[in-house]
Length: 213
Image 1 (spheres, one colour):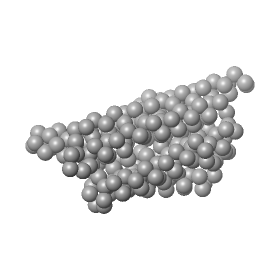
Image 2 (spheres, rainbow, N blue to C red; image 1 turned 30 degrees about the vertical axis):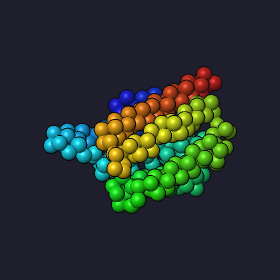
Image 3 (cartoon, rainbow, N blue to C red; image 1 turned 120 degrees about the vertical axis):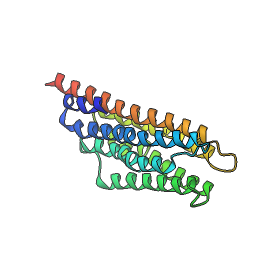
Image 4 (cartoon, one colour; image 1 turned 90 degrees about the vertical axis):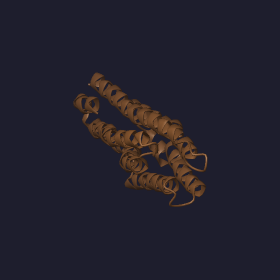
């Protein structure tokens, strides 16, 4: 988070908002993980091993829409995105998270909620690989295209870890340890790598613009 905030001053103006979002994603994650760690430690010491489910989803309800919005911000910076694209991506991310929470919290049938959540995720993947978002990215600079493709890969393959954790953490044979390990790995990889890709693309684009001048 500190790194992204400091590096924000070293990139072109059009990338500053994206760098701020990267810092927010990792900063919010750090804040919530301090509470999740304490919850898990106390629960494990008491022999319960209860996953910090609510705190995880509070974190994701903030950070995931921010990550999804990053696609829009990067494209909007070069005039290749619309407000409707943002709202579609934002809405799909909320459907994905709410369905996941209802299933994991046993407020609704687990597998149907997993299917709903995966369908929303699939829609986001469609938008970034074949929809309006992809079309907008194809008309932008090399740095913007790199950031977009890198984030699309993270969203596709990095986010695939979450449904695996969901599956392991639900049902009669739920494995809470495996669920937490997978979720932790996924958060570290996705949120940190996500921000680093934005930073690298911003640096690359800024250097290219400077050399042209």
